Length: 583
Image (cartoon, rainbow, N blue to C red; front, side, top):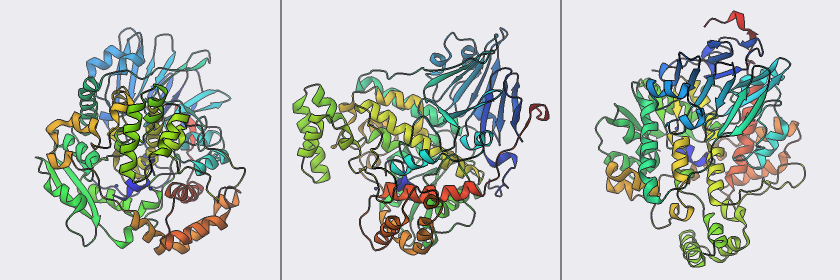
């Protein structure tokens, strides 16, 4: 579907729309240290009162678990998690909480209070459930929504972060958020808050090392258990398009009925994703075609306003299609919708491993893989070989990345690319996972949980443990995923090497909505001096005429402008004395 084209890699029971400020406007959680700030967001429910720990919005029981041990330890887990009550009870009193939860499938944050009152927060490994913090005069406050926390710092966007997003939307400034004064807590870290105000942040994860054969069953377990943790006992829908979304749909169908949506151009009733979806005969999987009409073209006006989110959402320009896509499954009763987002980041990495092979002196394998990649892309292998020999990882990773002509200020260089294929994979997945949270917030505005199992930390650990050159192949499509799934998918799906693409629809969408997009070019970003509207308008005119374009920076500029308009009209979260909140 369209959303694949705007992923982080670059060229998806209906309730009424809730008014801003109501309890269910956004699902998030947060807390503070013992004796810390005595104010909490309006409308929250307290999990604990000392130290303060709360949830905001509608949290189903399966996504919030808590236990208390006789020895005085308390543990709460937020997000889909494979651990049962007995395992949770053991983790509550474990000497090392991070080690205790590291083997759980899903996407979650664990919060523990020990008998001394020290709070320990173990963050999600893959940044799919990012945390943020704010320092107030009364102490540190943390939470899973940067937008909600921004009310404590004046509710101003961080212009430098926005500028870095316009330069590279996948890797904006890592130590800042889209909101001034709201700082990210690093993924894969421990946040400790002591009763006396002491604060520390330390990393808890480092990549494991496994053979390909040892990793295959771990990939299968991590993905299968991650899906189970999300779908058991609820009405489920899923995208059914390429191998990634089809796989999670089939895994979900082992636990109950699944409604599988396949997007296709209106009037085209065969071929592409639709043909493969119809050929998939799985018990409990119902197929539902989703025709893409003219009003679904990218950048088309939607029937409901774009909600405010923590940062610009990847699907901002697709809100007309995305919202109707979600409402379609909601009208059929689904509350949990699965996607295949993140599958490309995990299993179809760019050839960064060539630089690793050069450092290791494995020149025969380097030449073989460079030649195979060049044949696939129909280009000369020598630039790849040269980049590998000189250690130019950025040229192997995203060679198109450059400052767009409409971005003002000095010719900044993009952030340095990590030095090997493993760190590139981790950074790439984390960037995509963090951005996908904004899409989940869009989905929540129409009453649907959006879940992306490929962003789970246990799955990332399993994949990155395999040597990079064994993960890579131009002869087999996503071999690690295919081998992990075995015969779960029919042979035709396991050997399929492509999925539907909609690049032409983006050109048509720009052409159909050009006046409105040109107005965006002269909007808030230009008013802040972050962009020069002239070059952006020229690029939009060129795309409308069918000119080839590097889509990521163009989509970043449009998404950021739409986001700034949404947050400008949003009502800030109100914070009230904790005594006014009932547990």
